[in-house]
Figure 1 (cartoon, rainbow, N blue to C red):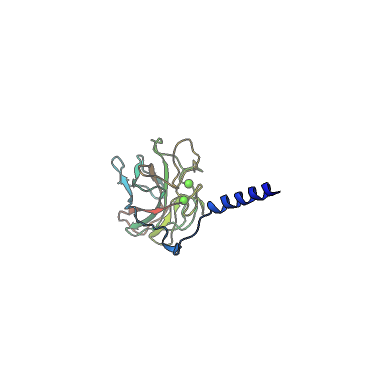
Figure 2 (cartoon, rainbow, N blue to C red; figure 1 turned 135 degrees about the horizontal axis):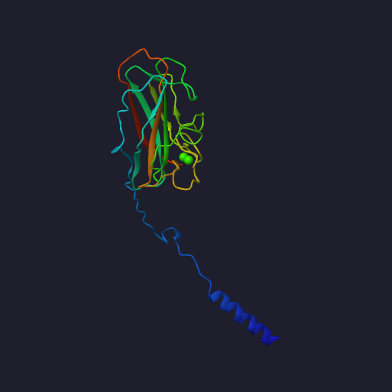
Length: 218
Ligand SMILES: [Ca+2]
Ligand SMILES: [Ca+2]
């Protein structure tokens, strides 16, 4: 019995010997410094129209015409996940057609489409369900009650999928054509398609301008 008591006392002493005690002011037992760095990022867009015929010339009333060479749109900068907004205007007296239909019915109402493809698409696409299509959520037609349009999202603002002015390749096409979440140096081809109204009240040349601006995705 005496041996057991001695062993117990020895174990208790060992336990007490390894116990740590807090010092009198624990608040200064560690210190840290925080450095702040803000990325000086850049987000931009560039359009090259080198071989695009910008003057489509004399076009018959009710007829269709389109750009036969693409304008190349390049995403610039060093930050990921860039998307585009499109604004457009007509100078000369005409207005945009107000409906997501293939034909306009009103005097001076110009049907205008803008479609993006991957840069592997080198020849002008035909109008159909994939390119220059109509539709409220994914149509490629610019509609307005006036000569001014937008700015409106190309693709989807806040999400991904097959949005406006994109082709049906959407997010999963055989080649990159998605207009959602693009990264620096991404390139797309822009094609423009027009169908004239059957009647006009003005004879002057009509000038259609397309303006792209960047926005952060998704
Ligand atoms: Ca998006
Ligand atoms: Ca998309």
